[in-house]
Image (cartoon, rainbow, N blue to C red; front, side, top):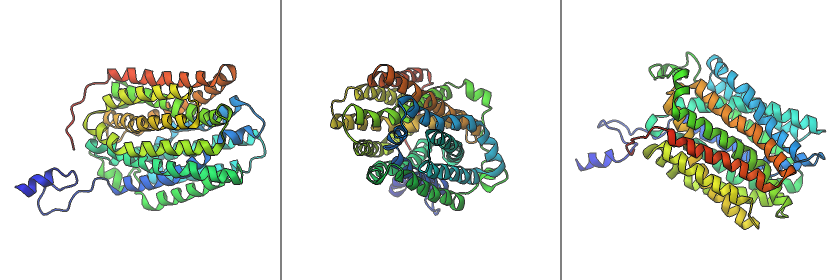
Length: 412
């Protein structure tokens, strides 16, 4: 009895004597985490230098924002098609093709001769990114147990975060060689990620073994999902993240470091790497909190803290204060990344490909408009205006989450 009680306290333990322990995460989740690592190492390499590289073509802040927005715009436009492609070819194939498109376009960005070429190539990369992100999240929500959904998402995002720790630091070193070197490095890491997905993931397309295993899973009609306050709150939260995390923060902070603080791109890389460490350390407890306490309190608290930190960043007097505030944002982001996605899985069921596409499109919509508005606000007013407007959407997302139903969860 004592042994049985001890086993019940372990989430991986089998409930049936004589059987092998049940693993926390299935193979596909683990493979997706590895893929995420290679994707984010490359992306993190590019982040510190992209705005500066774009400015080297003799353009202003608005044009810098347009390059970031072009990537998100094509993701937004192509996301609705991804669900049908997944049904036709399976998650594994679409994921690999999508990563291949981003790899090719990123390598060509480093060889661009004009701003127009750069803009078009970043837009092409957005198509591949949509294919990758929608197929990966669809597979993740399909295979994760509802009681461990946030932890599966957390593991997947952990791959991004570990890559994010190394990426900006590597990017800062590569930037000392040339502003184009990071883009070639990005193409290489994406190629590795695509090959891993192609050969190690099981396809979840129609008729596959994975699809058959999920045949009994509940799939909520999309009209019902749209009326679900959990889904609406998650979409609004993802829009706020797209505007602030993917758009405003990525666009403004590298420029803020150079223009206001008088630093270099290497400073940006170090500060973002520190924030990634903070987010990685907070990810496991954040995911467990989301699974055991609930999605609602996680969204309300995290988005409020993130909004306050973004406002404070605009008043940072030096790189040390900026780095500390980015670390606070990183801790909040650990909750922001897991809670909304888990809420989508709760509302849509295990086979919610279309809701995942809409959820992804909300982040893309924010990332399209956010950099453009932020760049315009900086040109017309100040950096503070760009940060404050982004923070406002984080506060709105936190307030709307109050409408989500209360949750009663059991620790697992």
